Image 1 (cartoon, helix red, strand yellow):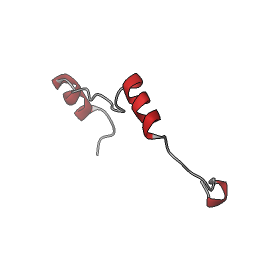
Image 2 (cartoon, rainbow, N blue to C red):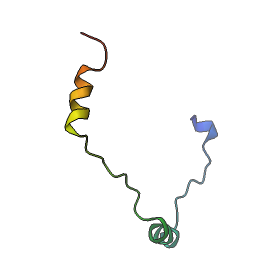
Image 3 (spheres, rainbow, N blue to C red):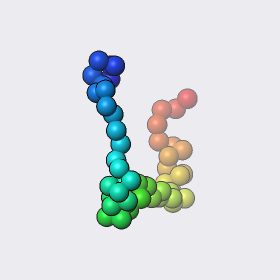
Length: 50
């Protein structure tokens, strides 16, 4: 994105709006899923042979 497409008055959310969204939607996070042992084993054999 070039500088010519950026607006001059970039502003984020107000503190009030941020609190409202945090309460409504929760924190912005992604839960990590742990791979099972067989998935880790399978990944070792999947792909090109070096």
